[in-house]
Length: 262
Image (cartoon, one colour):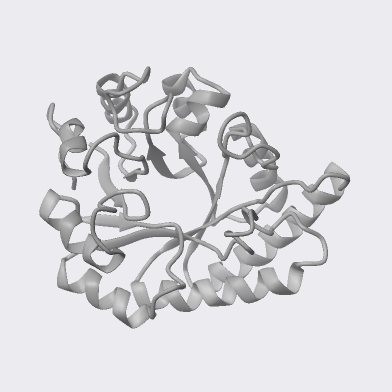
């Protein structure tokens, strides 16, 4: 059975961020993730994890100017030094939080930038990050994000594009972060896709589609998907990365039907 984690950037937003750890534990989750930890001291986050018996499942490398619209800098030529500094910052946090994997956001391809140059820059940066994380015994994830609704222009918008980068980099600690919501939009055929991609998948996330709300609000039949993941033998983390259509607590009905948040 998949192990469910709560994404604290989207869930329990009824309370301030640092209070969400306790809320997640009260709801039954034993793992958490969030977009970025860098706004808070690593020691304070570690204390919240320890006090609530939670595992830090994943967080993202620094994304550049997020508030200004950037969604990662790994594909941007001329930003390599910033990217490498971000890798070091992420490693410091991962050590403090006992987190074994971080995600790299490829970024948006700027208008006018040749796609081949963007991809070459991405591959070189991923190769560097993978080597540094390997020294720490950590895994680097790469995520495909839909370019139709949420992030137009995102360089890696399909699973196969991510797999092609992973194979070109050739590092054993680079894995696919597979998000059911994004891939339902871009690819569909979720269970057959997961079965094909399972050897590369290191982490999974989910939300229903359309709307990016909790399971049961859209077109994805999550009972079948979760049961299918059981049959396929996926035993990694599944992070709830959705925007509740109501309060977070009221949105957690999907945890029933035999599925537990552990």
